[in-house]
Image (cartoon, rainbow, N blue to C red):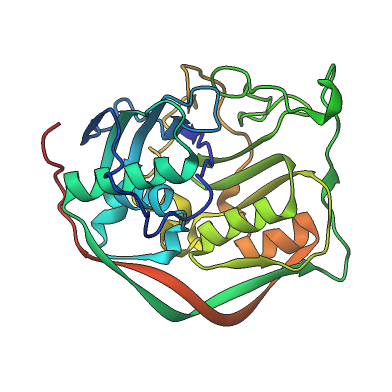
Length: 316
C-alpha cells in the first residue's frame, strides 16, 4: 500500500509579537488535546477556518505538531523555531471559537496565549547567523508553466472557492487539482515526495522549498505572475523531514499493490505509478524539472527559542 497525504499549506501572515492591549486576547472557547494515532495507515493534517477564510469564527487544526502551531501563532517558519525534538513528533488536535470581527493579528495573539496557557510555554528571541539559499534561474532557462485560467472563472480575477474535500486522484495515483484552481500540496509515497503547485507565484515555491530544506530560500528569479509546477524528489534530500518532520513513514506496499489518499474528506485512488527509488535530490530536481537553481549563502535570522514546554496540554 502506498500512501499519499494531502497537506494544505496554510499560514497566517504577519507576526503578532508584543500585542498592546488592556485585556488579554482569548478565544471564546478552545479545545486542545493529543491527536489519536493514525489508523489503517491513514492520517490527515490540515487547518480550516480563521480570519480571512470562509469560516472566520472558528479555527480547526488536525494532527498538528506544536511547532506547526507555533508557526501559525507567531507568523514564523518552522526553521525559525529552536527546541526539543518532540516539538515535531507529538501531534495535537485544536479547535477554537473566535470572537466576531477579530483580525488576523488578534487571532495570532489569541493562539499565542492559548499555547502558553495549555503547554506552559516560555520562549525568547535570538538573532542567529543562518545558512540560506537563493533561488535563481538556471542556465537552461525556467521550465515553469504559466498558469491557465480556470474554465468559467469569475470576473475581475477573483479566485473560485476550492471544492470540498481533496483534489481528485489522477491516473498516476497522485492528487490532481482542476485546471486553474489555486492549490499547493505535497503527496508522499514510500519512495519520495511530490510537490504540486497550481496558480502559485515563485515566492510561494521558495517558501515551500525553505520549509523542506529547513532554512530560508530567497526568490531571486525575477519571475512575475503565477505558475503551475510538479516537483518529484527523494525523501533523503529533505533536511530533518522538512515540513513533514515527525510524521510516521508510509507503510510498505503489500501485494497486490493498492493505494490510499487522506485529505480533508474521505477518498481513495490507485497507488502512484513509477518507481521513485531513483528519485533525484531536491537540488537536482529543482534544476532539471523547474529550470531553477539553489545557491547557498548565509545571513542573520530571528529565531524563537523554546525554553520550556509541556508535552501534555492542560485539560480543556
